[in-house]
Length: 159
Image 1 (cartoon, rainbow, N blue to C red):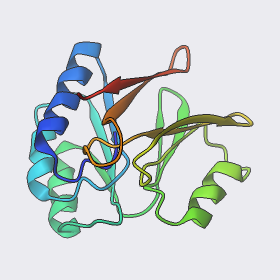
Image 2 (image 1 turned 30 degrees about the vertical axis):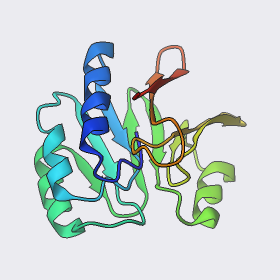
Image 3 (image 1 turned 45 degrees about the vertical axis):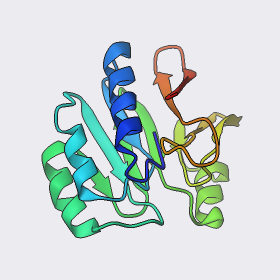
Image 4 (image 1 turned 120 degrees about the horizontal axis):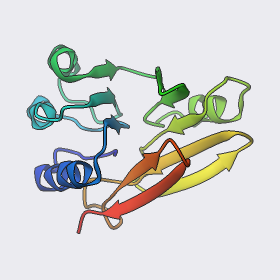
């Protein structure tokens, strides 16, 4: 998920979809914004990864709160899930984003946001996913669910 911009009803809908689909890891590609939205993820039993975006709330408070519920990256996050490597970056700086996508860095997946538009593309062996916006500003609000076994990505509407 990405670009939720404090839209609590859609964050709640996303969490309900994740629960229904048995999601074990939530990756948020930035612009969550306010610390009160972090609290919404406290009941999620899996791992939760969040990076900052360009619309910043109180990142110090968010960083401290995330110590209780998951992992917070102020810029680029790198982590591994079930043997697959991930880069997580909001996407504000196109040069940085392109360096993650087109470099020889060994990522299986690059998760990004910022544009508020869903995107799924493959660049060599990397899969690039922008889940679209959780907020309801430009497009139909969506989240994406990745199945690591078959590498399929499904987009789910929040309307």
